[in-house]
Amino acid sequence: MHQPIYSPSQILLLLELEANKAKSLAWVAEDPENRWTGYHTTDLDHWAEYSIFTVEQYNRFNITTDISELHKEIYGVKLRTNFDLWTTAELEKEYESLERQFDDHAKVEAERETNSISEFEAAVSRLITEQDVDRATVIKWLMDAEDAQENDYFCYCNDLPYGYIDKDILKEAA
Image 1 (tube, rainbow, N blue to C red):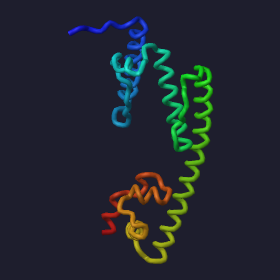
Image 2 (cartoon, rainbow, N blue to C red):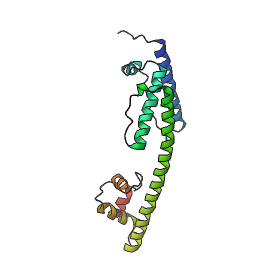
Image 3 (cartoon, rainbow, N blue to C red):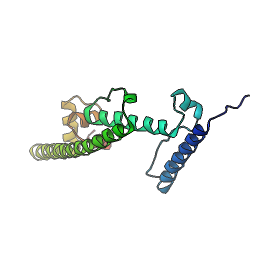
Image 4 (cartoon, helix red, strand yellow):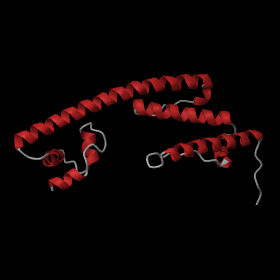
């Protein structure tokens, strides 16, 4: 079997990929019970399929991916543009701008979530008092009223964080 010959820039790319992988694995090793991460493959043939042969091309790939994902998180759709027309400085400026927007978006979302939890808990408390029943029963009633068979769907419908309604609570109401 013929062993591929890689250019010096590809060897530098391999070293970058391996260093990033080692950094990711070290981070997980600090707290393996609570941390998980993925990392990019170190297979240079894989990267060649994407026309990535240098560290600079790899870094541009990462920043354009991050820009697309941040844009989707904020606006609900990935940014569709020809990133080849952007300079590295323009990409970095766009990424920094999206990071600031994401921070603002996260604050608004956290406030909305807090308000949703408060409103939900007030309604649950009111029904517990009015109907003289336990929390599990009230939540079961609310889920039935929305025809929500799954906790996460119910949370979604009520702007609650996923997992907010403990799955065990429905067992209590059964």
